[in-house]
Length: 188
Figure 1 (cartoon, rainbow, N blue to C red):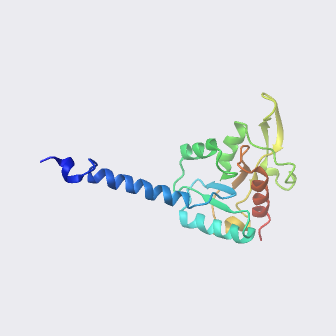
Figure 2 (figure 1 turned 180 degrees about the horizontal axis):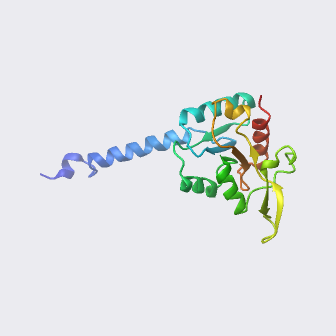
Figure 3 (figure 1 turned 60 degrees about the vertical axis):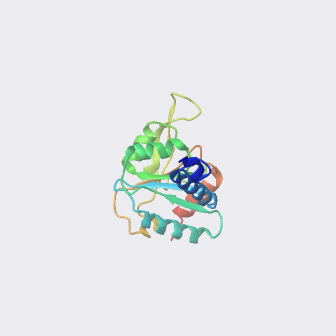
């Protein structure tokens, strides 16, 4: 007996199931709107998704309806995951431990923040870094903002190594990312 005659289309049951699953996933992904500002946070001990949700809700309440934000994390610390997230450039704000921040700052490529934040208020974030526009030249610049003691991270009772936020130089929306970081810093 010809299987094609029985099934009519020549597609196996499994192929139809895979196609249907793919369409459902595609439609589900299309329904989500991309946030105005994406934040990636990764402490050295990792961060559980439910804690990231609290951070997202707390910050979105502080911001109001706009700009919209999304907080992304990983439950375990993985330097390769961090490297991929930074290299992809999808996040406007990256928040990492002091040790990781020092490594990224040493390698250059972090955006100076002096135009938006007072370096005297955040001396821990002033580091000798390679200038983005002049290869081989260095200067002491404010490139990160310490956050561990701030109200936002304390909304999840964060206890751990100092965390530094920096603005990704290729942030999808640079101005909104800066404004969101200002709001994080000034939360009470």
